Length: 108
Image (cartoon, rainbow, N blue to C red):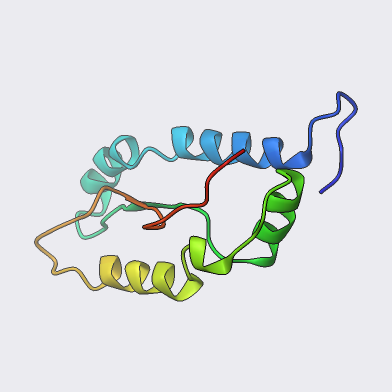
């Protein structure tokens, strides 16, 4: 990760960006207008926690903490959840879904 002029790391920008994306992608807001135009469209938002990726290795290094892949969600777990949402019967919709690791790493 690169350092920003004020000393903070780009990771904080990524976090803020994700938070903003969540604020602006509020499915309830869009679902109402979509339902009028396309009643068959379902809008779901999935918010996974930290996933075991190379990026998490960098993030933990910036946090000066150990990285253990077992502390994070597997990418396959997130993919399975997406498939579950997509395969939901037509009479239901999942609006917001948050997924977190069962045993998240501690922060220092």
